[in-house]
Length: 134
Image 1 (cartoon, rainbow, N blue to C red):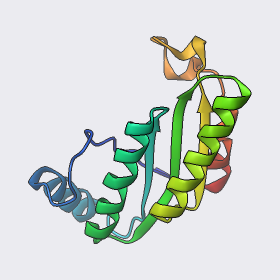
Image 2: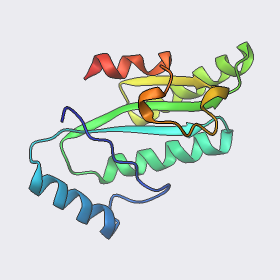
Image 3: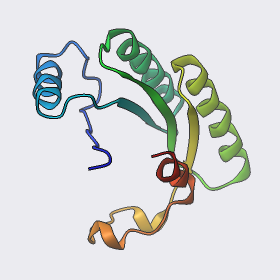
């Protein structure tokens, strides 16, 4: 595989026995893999602030090779004011966490409640950078 995606439950610590065990098993099976972290928040001031706080604590705790790749603000209403505000929040998160990228993803109504095969998912232009990055 070129990459793996691990989606942890909200608010879990890098010191959690579950995370420690998961990482130990993963790295014992597939050593020398960079751990690139992506933090995602919805478009709520409280969620953005708590995600930034959480990400900063994880970045202090993590001991595996890698770095914070991106801070994403997701589900942003598709109007100029909200998109601009979200862009500022995403950039603030990127800077505070030390991520390489900040990304804003507007609400895609066709993805709400999406239940078809992943192969039928429409392309999301805001995350095309990730494909070219890897």
